[in-house]
Image 1: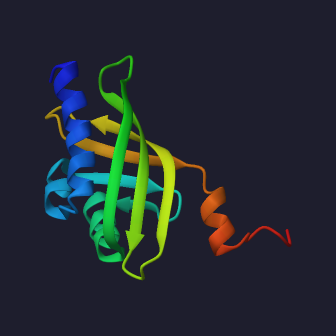
Image 2: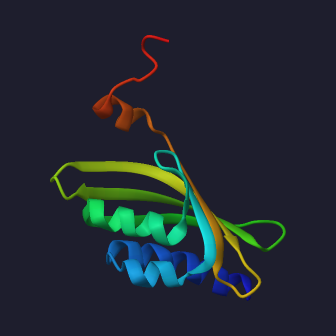
Length: 130
């Protein structure tokens, strides 16, 4: 894949997330791919996105930058996520998704990075008594 094709694939991921196209998102990942999430830990990509789809009512993702790694097999995307849960709760946060490409051009893994402080304010500080 060319560098531009990789950038296009990463942007396509965010388009599919905004469209809530879970099957389309899963198709971008290898069958053995995993996602590393701050809240859910390491999960099979298919399982992760199905769980996300079941919890979400609407998503709007705005991509600011897509940066390619020096070795050509990785990319990072800085984004803003406007997320509405099925419960009606809404969250907006910025983060970075870090993708690794497999040899066939699909994603072999994705790691999610974001400041969990705003979410902790809503959920509670589990370390307050530590």
